[in-house]
Picture 1 (cartoon, one colour):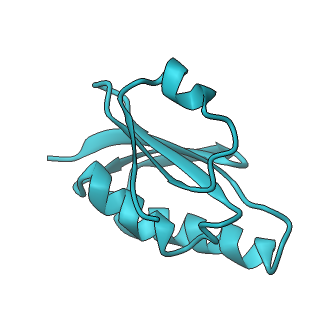
Picture 2 (cartoon, one colour):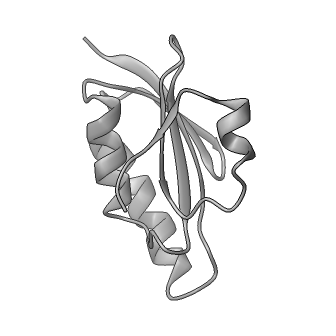
Length: 103
């Protein structure tokens, strides 16, 4: 059964940011069950049959984890993952349940 997730992400200007942005969009599209909302440039609301950890691992593979950042969360529960470079540890205070995936 598909669950509803959201992802927000920040792509650093290093390397090829346009390609990484397009790669993230393409990866989310592959992970969706054909229902997604992309009206905002770095925020996507979508349904997926994949687990939050599977989604996080796939997004991690599409970003520069030393410079970019992505935050993925379920809409129905307090379950969230982040991948990449976290600059502000305040995220853990706002979302104490968030877990890091990857290096």
